[in-house]
Amino acid sequence: MCAALTGCSTNSSADDPRHAPPSTTSATVSGSPSTRSAAPSPDPGAPIEAAYRKYWEEKVKAYAKASVQGTDLKKYAVAEAFTAAEMEVQALKTKGLVATGKPVLAPKVTSVDNKRKVPQGTLSDCTDVSGWTLVQQSNGADVTLPDDRLTRYVTKAVAEKWYGRWVIVKVTPEDRSC
Image (cartoon, rainbow, N blue to C red):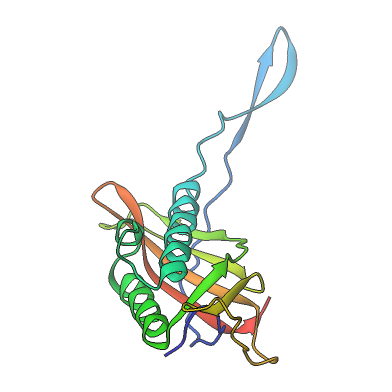
């Protein structure tokens, strides 16, 4: 069992299709050339990043009380992402632990494919859990963790658009620092 606070994981890779930047066009106005950019389009990755950040917000709430009950985790995490988080929280509960503080996230959306039957996006994050600590639920005493554990590590996530909203379907913390 690998909880997010320990920084251990398995590696995975995801497709990384690239999108062309908005085009610019030249036009002649009153006999002098000018360059106009196409109207800025909304960032297609913004809703994916927002769903990822909400996933973490709810996961932090669940870790703080060693229960997914009373959180909206299921609203933002489905499939493997929800199952893994639920198992991590259950492991904390079994050990009588909770987490205080919160991780610092730095997600970057790496791909968005809205042409799929189920639109999908991926992101990469440098997850910093150094400010997210485990404590004994009964008395708040700090839990000593290995000194050599990764506290800043790469996390890969896959999101899909289900019923008109983006949800996180898979989260893979990698065993490498960032």
